Amino acid sequence: MPQVSVIIPVYNGEKYIAQALDSVFAQTFRDFEIIVIDDGSTDGTEAILRHYGDKIVYLKNDHVGPASSRNLGISVARGDFIAFLDADDIWLPTKLERQVAFAALHPDFGIITTDAATFDHTGITEASAAAHKYIPSGHVLKELLFDNWIGTSCAMVRHECFKRVGTFDQEAFVRGEDWVMWMRIAALYPVYFLNEVLIHYRVHSQSYSRADLEKQFRDLFINFEKVERLIPQLPPDLLREARFRVCLRRGVEDLRNLDSQRARGKLRMALQYKPWHAKSLALLSLAYLPPRLLRLLKGAGKGPLRLLLPKKQAGQLGSSAKCLER
Image (tube, rainbow, N blue to C red):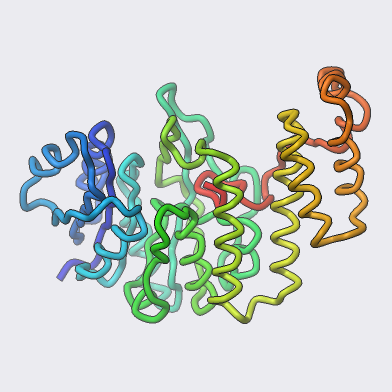
């Protein structure tokens, strides 16, 4: 029986899937099986996967999203640990070795995750998530509510966790299901962050991190409702604070992009959670300025916009590479 089951969902991944698979075969830790789930690809993905023959377990799924494919992989996985890899990401050679070594010495930890670097066609774009903020280990449920630093391709999870909490939520194409799962596990198990860059996370035009920001925003609030239902021990005031921060941050981003109408909607939502929050009120007032004046203020880089629209800070909700708002 393999010690680690590597689960890779793929949809129309002919451009990158071979690189992802080859990064698994290059691991210094060798006791693994690879389960690839084709989520209804219509390109040349199947032909590439067939080339690997019995080196991989190849499954086919209807095109219903990565959560369903991960669940299919979990259902046939034989390993004590489940490690996930997105089909466009790359593992560095010692990734599994370092995680399995920690897990062997600390059997109480449910998730062992790592640091990651982002890259695109020009090379590394962000060398480390941990370079910008402190990332905790242990019982981190409350911290994960505000900032998901667990990238799917970074996580190795004890198989027993899924037997205890269940599988990924499969609501079709509502993303962020990985964060909901990490929260469910963190409610019962400690989580360890291995402060080493062992994954390269690819950013490209099809990445969810570059997807429609309004869809990301809607998905977040759908997932907040799921977390509230599935993890009743989370205090209501913390959930209210998390929702408030998302509304405020996204309202700020809309203002920075001079999208006053959307900014007003999100800032009004923020004020529903904190009715007399001074900064939200001030930003909402700015959002009612004529577009031309708002543009002039932004271009000048002075005055209220400079004070109220600071640069995005690390440590806020969804600030890491594989973030809550992916």
